[in-house]
Length: 187
Image (tube, rainbow, N blue to C red; front, side, top):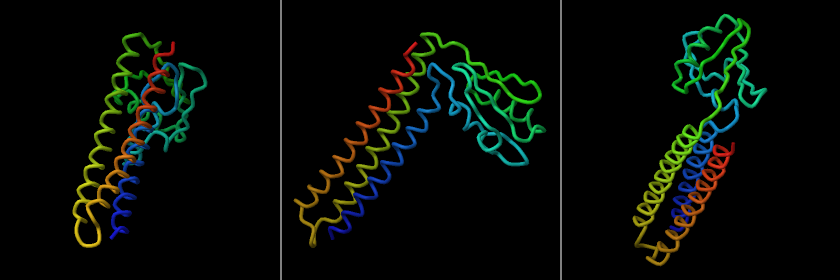
C-alpha cells in the first residue's frame, strides 16, 4: 500500500513542478526594464489557415535594450504578423520596412513598473493556489488509503511529505517573484 502512497506523492510532485515551470514561462512574458524575445514569442498569428505562435513563423531578437526585431520567414505574411502584434493586447506598436518588423519599447514609468509588479504578483498567487489545490488532492487521496496495511501514522508521514513538497514549491515561486520584481523595478 505504501507503493500507492508513493505514486500519489510522485504525481503531486510532478504536477507542482508543472505549475512552477508554467509560472516561470509566464514571468518571462512580463515586461521588465529591457526587451526580450519572450515578450512576443507567444503572440498567436493566423497564417496558412492555422493559428500559430509567433516564434514558429519568425526569428525574434532583442538587439538593443528597448528594441525587438521580428524577421518573418515568409515575407508575404509580414502584414498578418504585424496585425497580430498590434492586436495582441500587449500595447506594442510595430513598424515594418517591408523586410523586418521592429517593435520599439517605450521607457517604463514608475507607474508602469508598479503595474508589472502587480501583474507578476497576481500570477504567482494563482500558481500558489494551484499548488495548494494539488496538495489538497494528494492529501484526500492519501486519506482514502487509511485502513488495511496503511496506518494513520503512515498517512500522517505521507501528508508531511506532501506538505514539504508544497512548501518547497511555494518558496521557489516566491523566489521567482522576488527576482522578477527586482528586474522590473531596476531602472
